[in-house]
Image (cartoon, rainbow over all chains, first blue to last red; front, side):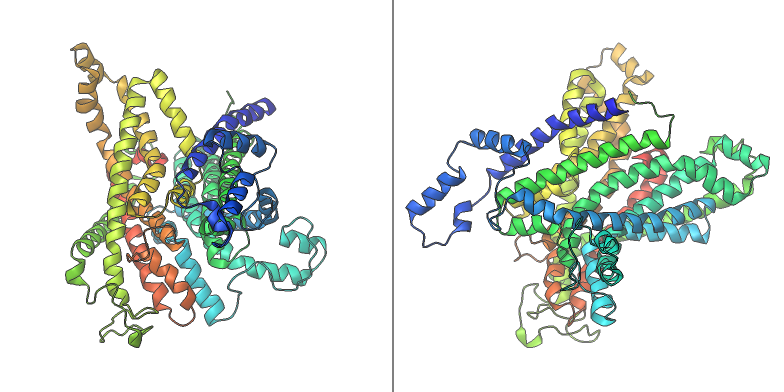
Length: 334
Length: 296
């Protein structure tokens, strides 16, 4: 198992290097000059040249790439043009917010999607099944920025129940320990802060989880239905086990491998979805950071974030592969 | 599926038939809804100038932010600079239509060509193509498109290239698997024995056998392209803002969320219904043609 994990990790390295090369090549197409984004137009040409020199912008692309790669290995993605801070520092500061949001969205999707899918599979063709099918297709087809805007309109604008954006109320005075606000609040025993953070998290998590809910519902339904056709289900029925017990203990458990796979794959999609949801809700994560970086042509920030995003995506997929073996011992690693 | 029913006595034939019947009804509804959506999108896109009551970019600050009025000149209301929402939705369908069709076309051509070649020939060609797939597959969804648009710039052509870059993969994976399975089938071996060239076999035996999967995937690819394009436009990374798009309209609506709900509701509804229709159509086609595809 450990060997498998190490081998998979090692296999991801060349992929990441090529991904870096692809992104770096794309950057060469970038219109405009990064320097002109940085300093005012009144700066003299000599000043501009000095800055180009300092940033290494005059080196040949290959040299720039190798320098970048060498630094990236040590976690140094350069300095953000806009924030004048190391990219890595910016990312680490904002990463917990994105992870917190993505985990909460996953929780929403699992809690809604799995029971819906299992129950639909238990009664194929019923009203409940049609409802679930419609519901899941609606979930998959809704653009999440649209649901986000509509929910803000209703919950924040109309009913004033939940905040329209941000991650926590101002001046909460919570000490940063892990960066995960809910966890920090619990660790410090601040239930007021926990509640405040939860209220801010509710809408973005629901919105981000919508598509995943639809997908999990469909996949759970399909896998449980397939499992229900297996011989062991007939055996269990012949033994006289109750319907619910067969459904959950036998069919659902065997369908779990497929469900976990899709949760893992969709977690990657959540990271992309987070860019949009974070922008809608002014959530201070790495997704909104990337979008801001793009609009201000903050190239070091963009390339660093694209790579970090991709690395996380690859890592999550690796973790899913490892999880399989825990859920289903029949899967042999080779 | 039907093979196992002969043995499964407990389920009972009548129950099974009931299940099949209701399932077929649902499938029929899905296909109907999906085809209607596609037809509506085509009509809206092709005949925008005749259907739209106003020019899409005609501004009139005197009528800015008018609420929907079913009997007035602006049925779905107007936006912050007095442009007619309905007209912009009708014209906005053009970008969605162009993007969906082009992305589906280019992605299927690239993906199917590589997938069939990889699956049919196998060996080194296959592993080389698989390496390329692995690289593209490593980007989180939409990330490659965002990176391309962020660096190369905005515009219809670039958005199409960016979305194609992420969408050819499913075509490649599915057709590779199918071509691989076909390669050792008797009729293909027979053709080879009779002296048919690889090119002939691929054109006359492999491609016709993967067509159904391609049709099903195209429906989903179009749905995906419309969502992706509107996401890019919403983020301000899509086509230039002078062209009306559904995502761009939603982006505009954000600043007026509390005062003009119609600016957000209707363009989003257009995206939702179109994507829902294409997804349902894809699902109906999949059930019709090949239940096995479900695993992809």
